[in-house]
Length: 405
Image (cartoon, rainbow, N blue to C red; front, side, top):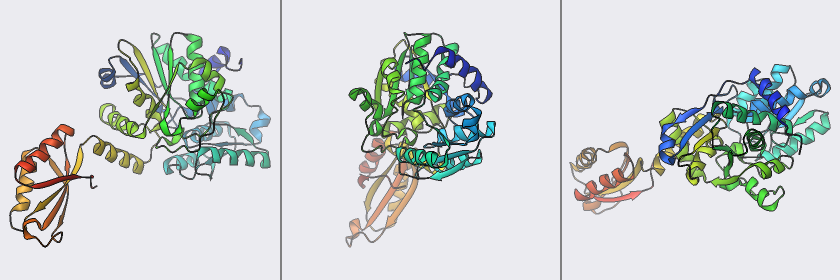
């Protein structure tokens, strides 16, 4: 296991400075209050390509022979590695082909093309795209660059630890998202080299927990599915080359559900004014499962490449999940003034009507002939209950239903 060495990490740390933005740690007062520790964010979502992946891609291409580069390179990626490879290849004037899953967000596809790479959409998940890319590499004699199962790539990703420890030498915990294992293997190995006392925590989606499965089985395990909104970490099988380093250097693996990522996205937007993609939020969502009282923790925000449609959907789901948007069905008598009564009751309770559907044909009973479906904005669960109680106290036949947006 001598392939991830301090010498290579030091070399990579200097090389990647040519293509990376300085991502200084951001202290999070909000997350610190939530956890009882001091929580810092490593905003790799602010990189040139919107993710940390440019580190590993650039270091890998930098260490290639001229012959390997001249053949052209091919890779597979759910998006962020694709942009990293495309960006790094452009710097060296190397032809790059990227195979991406058909479900990859459009923003990632377009940005990859924008850096000069040729894009092929193939497969439903990363693993299918990867197999196809390897097939093309053999057929066309291209140099294949793996997104995570490559120790040079992992070395480049590990440069994040060098920066964290230089800036915060007394860090106690580093949390990193886990997909195939490239980031966590590099980050954990260098961190342990520099300070063995640092605790390294890997966080992956519950529905794509391939690293947890691999560590349990002591070998890579292929999951049946990897169905998660964290598309950047939707990997069915982790890399066999990086697994030994994860086993040796990662102290704990935890998993989080998609609903926790939705909440974390809302928190990040509202409290830090930052856009972080679902995979990048795994480290933040995982904080709740740790006892950080009196400790200093750094969450690596691995990327921020999220398309606007996905963003809109996540925000809506987050607001509904936190009872800041809810809907009620109200049955009203078919007579003048009833709609005004509903509106006034909601306004008096400080609710804000954002949508209203009026159906006069729900019943032939004129005492309950009109159904009003009102979607209301509230401050949270307690306020929602206050509004519903106010409607009931006003003698209105009220029933909460699924939010209508």
